[in-house]
Image (cartoon, rainbow, N blue to C red; front, side, top):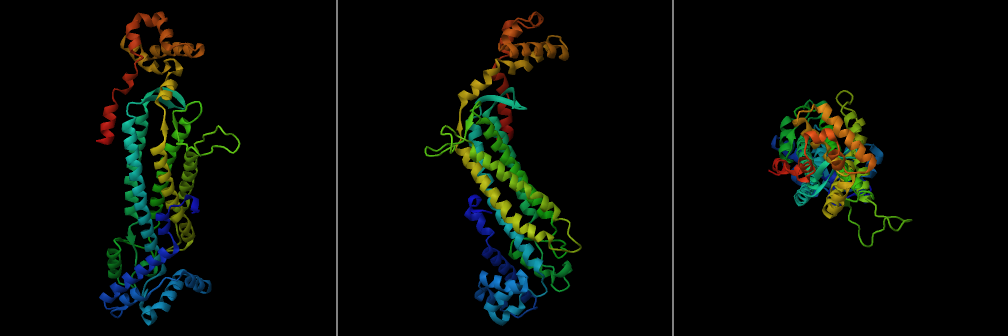
Length: 430
């Protein structure tokens, strides 16, 4: 992933040197198990651990000749540790190392993403409580619907990220497996106890059955969850982008004093961070299809998945980590304009109360169809003539026979629409 969208902590997980360190940890753990089983001489693992050095340039130089990364790695290690190096990797196959290592990288990345989500949850909870009773218009199809509160909008995002956290925890568990089963996964040349030892040593579970590789449905699930989280990131970003429109101006990204919005127009204050999140979310979601296609490999294995994972492993996790942190900062520092929310809510002159009037008419004996038609007629007249819905309804003789003006005016009370907010908040925040 390019530096612009990378954070150091998660990027280091995918550094080439770190990958080789994980490979070495796996080989040393396997050697320790082999020693315990009497398959190789005592002291091999400790000598390798003491003398082994990761030399990336040397690994690359060897790989240019042998065209095999694991062999190049093992050869470079053997050059450092001496004769005991011949006992490394005994009975194992490349995928034992590569797949187990890849899962470790996904786990570590996933844990950082969990921390990111926790931070977003904190901000969303604080903001949703702060704006719990901040009235704004709810929109469906982009059109004014009925009143809601800005706190409820944020509470909806909070609950979604709670689900995302649970999904990601499940996805991390899904890829927390270790395979040390040898060629085609039969354990013909490597004792299953070695796999058990390595798994325990590295805090992994044994893969119940590996066909020389760890089944890729596990990874497809993991990357699908990342894509869902990216979708949630974009849902929040789009809401902010829409609410920042000039004609709305209900919410705005923080704009620094020295910040510039446009190279051409000095007045511009654009929601560039939220727009950026939309783009990054598209990237993370784009990795799902290749991850799903990796499930279907030839027979016990091929390497068609390898090039895919070398790209999507680091790119998806690094990108999502950056996006989550950017979202956290947007939410934390955004400007919220309650007065503008209230002003926008009132621009339809009371049309947003139409449903309550319709329901009241049904209580007075009208069918729903008749009540709907009466209110719709008044609403359309009010909209066309830019007059208040209350005034239009009050002049309708049929409605006057059913509802008094005193009763009618009560139906234009905003508090009616917030009376059950505590019920929702108790569900979400317990």
